Structures are given as C-alpha cells and as structure tokens.
Picture (cartoon, rainbow, N blue to C red):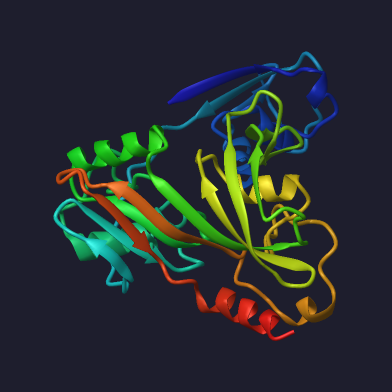
Length: 311
C-alpha cells in the first residue's frame, strides 16, 4: 500500500479533485481508476473525504492511499501469431493493429502476452513479472508490426540493454497529413508528459532526449508515405514528433486534432493511426549475429499508397 501527500499549487487552484489527480500522480493513473479511489474513500483533502467534484484551492493537502496491486492470473490463449523469427532465445512477431501487447486490469485476455504464453509455454522470461512475461518493449494497441519477446532472462537482459543503448534498430512506416519540403530530415526534440493533459506526451522543455530520422518515400497529394528510424524510443515518439512539426499521422485520434485532409482522403479510412513497425534489427543474445526482421506493410496502409499512386 502506497500513500501520497500532495500540496495543491496555483496550477490546480479551482480544478476538480478527480481531474487534478490525473496530473498530480506519477505514474499517471486513469481517470476512471482515480474516481474509484475517491468513491472508495481512499482520497482526502485536508483530512476530510471529498467527492470527485470537489473544487481544490491552492494550499489544500491531498492524501491519497493506493491499494496494493492485485496479482492477476493470465491465461494462455490460442490466438494465431504471425511469426517473423523464432529460436530458443527470442521470438519476433508481426502484431496486428488493434491488439494490446500486455494485459492490464480490466483487460486480461486477447493480448499478445496471452498468445505468446500459449505458443511458448513456460519458456518466457520473467523479468517483467506476471503481467508482461517475455516482453522487453511495447508498441501501441493501434500500431502494427514487429515486436520482440524473450524466452529466458539472459536474452531479456541482452535485448533490454540493446534497447537502452539504442543499438536495437527500429524502423517504422507511416502515413502523415501534409507533404514535408525535405526528402530527409531529423526531428530532435525532447518529449515528456503534456502539461495540459497528463495522459498525453508532448515536446516539452526538460523532457527526455528524443530523435527521429524521417525519409519521405512518396508524396501523395495532401499526405505523405514516410519512413521513421528511431534513435531513441520514447512513448508515442513518432506520433508526437510528427504532430509537433505539423505533419500528424493519418488516423491518430490523440495527436491529430487539426483539420482533416480533403479530396480523395475523405473517402479513405485507416485502422487507428497509420503507423507500422516495419523493421527490427538486433544482435542475437547467444550467437552475437545481427538479425533483421521485416514485417510486411498491412493491407490498409498498402492499399492507401496504391490508390494514391494512381492519381
């Protein structure tokens, strides 16, 4: 059980209790979970239990008690996997858009972890605990493509180190709104929590270093087909960087809030953000050989590119 004591500053003066707590707690908690904590009596303001709608005043003292996490039993599920590479140490799969990588409270089935547990049996690393066996990194639910999982702790440590020292090569393909002037460019801008919305990321002063190398593969008349190579791997990095320079990803409901493209684009839809983890390169934990896997571009993205090339 964890207890947080927070003094309300002027930034949150006049803000509802439930809304304020989504920005005051690290790691960030969901609004629904915070509301449950308030309703269960786990949140007090100046030593009094308050409702979620209570309006805060600068100088208030919030006390929040966070119950111990529940250990969930994750069941293997016979979900087909598109396997790009596999041996006794690692497995690389092409994750479809719409699939969650690892389970969370309220979402304990249908994930990549459920599928891996069925396919790999007991041979998954345990470093990340019961909810994320074998998982070293993640990609968003609506991002498709290459993701690596490890079958033992030694392999997990090796791949994690490659992720940390940026020697894990990750190349993405995406569709963005607009047509960048340059064929190749680099976005070097620090990323951190969005101060206006703690559930989102943003380019912020004092954020963590984030570098994305971008190549324009095709200009499609109001949009572009691009390749993005990550030097760093921050949360939502490509989505945040492209939005920050005025070229948000097609279908991104979080970071693409501007005007929608017109003309032929109005007739086309993508499944979530049009972002695909295309290539994954790594040094094998046992053989030290360099492995490169390629996940074919999903049909919904490929068909868009093909349609535009006809115009």
